Image 1: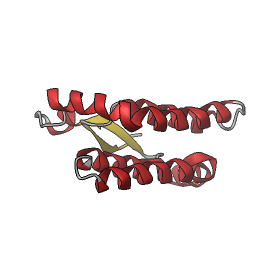
Image 2 (image 1 turned 90 degrees about the vertical axis):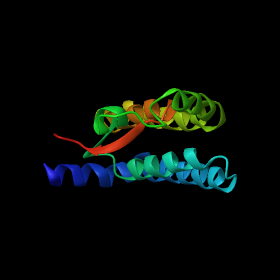
Image 3 (image 1 turned 45 degrees about the horizontal axis):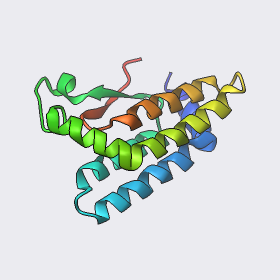
Image 4 (image 1 turned 180 degrees about the vertical axis):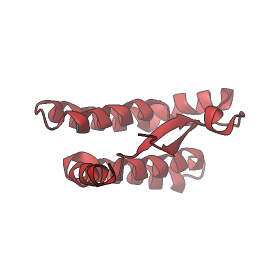
Length: 136
């Protein structure tokens, strides 16, 4: 199974992984430079990592993983996600959706398109989530 994940991740890099990871990193750098955007910048860099190597990783709610609330899983996290969506989330989600639609045009591209859909959904509201190893 590890070999298949590795092969999937290498193919992923070519079919949108590098482009979207660079997009996430660019947005993260811009947000970090503003100082106010530091909480969002952290999420950008985590998701950029996921955009580079998505097979074998999954996204989970931090409240479930840590079994306790934190600042990102409460009301402030919700407010932060709304601000995030308006400033950068919409554009990154559209990038993932673009790659997903183009990959869905081929049968072999469907699993990669599904990964882009997963990332697009995460792009809408990334605060309060963390990366975990995929149990499969």
